[in-house]
Structure formats: C-alpha cells, structure tokens
Amino acid sequence: MLQRFRANTAAVGGATVIALFIAVAIVGPVLAPHDPLAQDLFSNYESSSWAHPLGTDHLGRDNLSRMIYGARVSLTISVTSVVLGLLIGMAIGLVAAYSRGIVDAFLMRVVDMLLAFPDILLAIAIIAVLGEGIINTIIAVVVYSVPQFARIVRGAALAVIETDFVSAGRALGASHPRLVLRHIVPNCLSPIVVHATIMLGTAILIASGLSFLGLGVQPPDPEWGAMLSKGRELLRSTPIAAVAPGVAITAVVLSFSIVGDGLRDALDPKLEREVR
Amino acid sequence: MTAALAAFGRHVARALVHVVPVLFGISLLVFLVVHFIPGDPAVIAAGLESSPEVVERIRTELGLDLPLQQQFWRFLSGAVQGDLGESIRTGRPVAQEIVERFPHTFRIALGGTLLAALLGLLVGVTAAVHHNRLWDNLIMVLTLVAVSTPSYWLALMLMLLFSLELGLLPSIGVGTPLHYVLPILTLGMQSAGLIARMTRSTMLEVLRQEYIRTARAKGLVEVVVVYKHALRNTLIPIVSLIGLRFGGLLAGTVLVESVFAIPGMGRMIVEAVLNRDFPLLQGSVLVVATVFVLTNLLVDLVYGVVDPRLRPA
Image 1 (cartoon, rainbow over the protein chains, first blue to last red):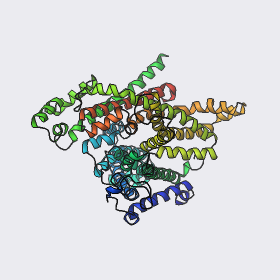
Image 2 (image 1 turned 90 degrees about the vertical axis):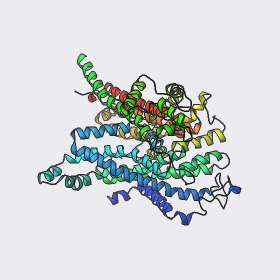
Image 3 (image 1 turned 180 degrees about the vertical axis):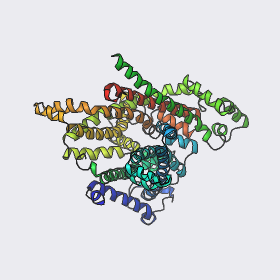
Image 4 (image 1 turned 120 degrees about the vertical axis):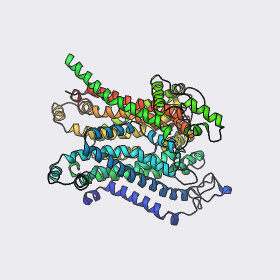
C-alpha cells in the first residue's frame, strides 16, 4: 500500500506540503520573526519590507508572524473537528447499519435533515446559536462533518455486514461489540480514512470562511480567513496581505485532497491505473 | 402509456414520501435554533441593555411565552402560508425582506450554475478525450486547484485583477448586469471544477463501451462519437450533480455576496447572525434549505424521466 502511495508523485507532493504545514504549526514560535499579537500603531498598513516581508496589518502587527501562528490555529481546528466528527459520525453510522430497521431509518432521516442545509449554511446556523470563537467554530465544523461521516460509515458497514466472515463470527457466538469493533470496523476503514483526509482540508475551508465573515475565530487570534478579510482593505496598496493567506489555504486544502485521492488509489488497488 | 404514467406516479409519490419528513425536520431544526441558545432568547433578541418592558414585548411578539409545541405549530403554519414573522431589527416582515433580496442571490446562483455546467462539461470532455496526455494532466491539476480555492479569496483576486488593475469590471454593488460578472465567475469556478472531474471520469468509462467502438468502426467522425454518442450517456449523473450544485451555490452566496457587497440572501444571513436577528435568520435559512431540498427532488424526478431504468418497477 505504502509503495503504491509512494509511486504517486502528486500524492507525495501533497504529503510534503502537509508535513511542512504541520511543522510550521508546531515550531511556529521559533520561526516567527515577531510576536503575532504585538501592536505597533506607528507602523501600521506597511507594505513588504525586510522587517515585515508580508507587511503589517491595521494595528501594525507583522503579517508573516500572524500567518505562521495562523497555521497553528487552522491545524488545531481542522484536526480536532475532524477527529470528533469522525468518532461521532462513525458511532451513528455503525449503530444505524448494525441495528437496521426503525433505528436506522430514524438516524438516517436525521442525517438527511442535516445534509439538507447546503454548504456553509449549517455551520453558520450553529454559530448563530453558540456565538463566535475558536471552540464554537470547531463545534460548527463537527456538526457539519458528522452527517457525512455517518453516511459513509453506514454505507461501508452495510457492505461488510453482508459478508460471510461476519456471519461466521456471529454464528460462532461473537458478542455485538466484538463483531462491530473487531470485524466490521477494520474492514470499512479505507473509505473513512480517505474521507477524513479530504475533510481535514474542507474543515480549514469552512473555518476560514466563517472567520472571513467575522463569525469564526475572533481577534486578536491570528487566522488565515480573518487575515484575508482584513487584507482586503489594503487590496490596492499591499495586495500581498490578501494574497498570502489565500495561497496558504488553497495549498493546504489542495494537498489534503490530493493525498486523499492518493490514499483512495493506494487502498483500493482495484481502481488503480486503468480508471484513473 | 398508462402503465408508464402509473410508474412515474409511483416514482413521484415515493420521492414525496422522502421529502416531506425532511422538510418537516428542517423546519423543526430551524425553529429550535432559537431555543438552543444559552440564556433567554428574548433578552438576546432585544439586546442585553434593553429594559425589561422591551424584553417582554419581544417575548410576546416572538411567541416565546407560549408552550413549545404551540410555538412550533405557529411557526410551521405561518411558514407554510408565507408568514415568517418580522425582522427584529427592521420590523418588516421577513418574507418581504426575502422577496426583495432573493432575486440577486438567484441570479448569481443560476449564472454560476450555468457557467459551471458549460465550462465543466467542456473541460471534462476535453480531458477525457486527451486521457493521460498533457491536456488531461493540466486540466486535472487546474480543476483540483479550482475545487480547493476558497471562494472569497478567488473573489478578491478577480476583483484585484479585473477591477483594480485592469479597470474592466465594477468591483462591488449591483447596479448593472456587469456587476454580476465577477460574482458569477467566482461562484461558478468551484462547481466547474467538480463537474469537470465528474464528466471526465464518467466519460472515460463510456468511451470504453462497445457501442463507442461500433460508432468508430462505422467510420463516424470523432466529434460525433464524442459529443453525440458518448456525451449523451454521460449526462445523467452529471445533470444530477449540476442540480445539486445549484442548491450548494445558493448557500455559497453567503461568502461571495459579502465580498462583492451584494444585498442578497447570503449577505442577509450573515447580517442576521451578527445582529442576532433570529426571525430573519430562521426565515432565510429555512428558505435556502427548502429550495435546496426541492431542487434535489426535481433532479430526482427528472432523473426518472431521463433514465427509465431508475424508475421503480
């Protein structure tokens, strides 16, 4: 599997960008030339210079340092929300697939309902209820991702439940938790891993979209979407302030998609080459 | 003919049986939004510094003093009759606000969908025809970039290029048809990428079919083979995706309208959240979600007409 993934140049490239992104998020304080929160009102709205390669914002804070710290914020939101969304969605999907009947029908109707709010709308509704901020942004992305995970897990689990080894396990008297955790879950992991990878990028897209609208991460915390929103005020004088965060978001989201696709190909050799 | 009609009737009935509970559910969720809010919704709606009298007036106006099931019934029966309550901020009927703002959003979403469909199909077919060659690889990279680019950033970059640098198009507002060009371009790009990728993969499968080989063996020109024989058979899943995208784009206007300062539904939703104007938020979210569900229903029905195999026997 690893070999197949390695042979995919695009996927390796994407993985490199993600590794870089994670590294920047972790060692950010060492890399950042300035304190991302330090204001200097005498040098606000500065364009690129040696001291401030990406210029300064409306409060004179260094944009490059804020970008570097922004990686940390984005990574935290993305990983936390996807892990939580995955766990909750997986639980719902497994319960639905395993119990069938009325429980399944009920859970899937709820999932349908949540999926009926297109795009960023559900996340916005959640923010309307909870208010802005990092924690609430994470919750909004979790609620956005849960129905998607639930659907994918249910679909994958239904296919596995029908297989002979699950029937055999049942016939041998395996308990329900054992059947689910030992036999069903490991065998429907690949679509889940693929979707989770792509979702890590989508989470950043949603969170930065909320922040751009002023509904996500709040000042003074540095976040790429929020920086973009501020950067548009200087679109004419310092376009780099609006260009850089956008390039960063696109690169990271793109990399997660490419790696997700690469994982799909690597995990499912049947689809390989020919269809690609 | 009657049998076919009866079968179609059953298809419609089945689709409706699926849609009605979903519509009921989204109304319930949208209704409950106000009640999930920590604290007293009347106080939040009135503003934290409001006097107790104002809070009580708002409470009565919103019906928050009634039992929950009665409130929901009021909300639901009102919504069905087109009464979505009044905006807390402007005091005007929410339905009226929506009627005024919806056309802007509709134009952008429709324009974006059409652009995405045309561009996506063209690009997707081109990629499939040049499978694994330079054009294909280039298109695959570009479509992936299109899918991953945040719409609000693309909006700013287009504005920077076409309005600020070249001075060709107006940057914000809605005065003329030209004002819609950049928003439509922004909104359509991501969906164009999705549609192109799907067109490509479906087309690749179809191009491998026997009847395509037959068509080529008959000596048909490649253009006819691709655009008549192959494209027709790839259209069904793609038409469905296009339908789904329309609903998605309707919600996508939330971001795009904010950048281009377009007074549409999307901008209204953001303002409603920032102003804690719950009736306005509930009404507009309900309308967008309902349009989304109904579009999907329509796509489902069209599906049944286009492809008889999908009708239940």
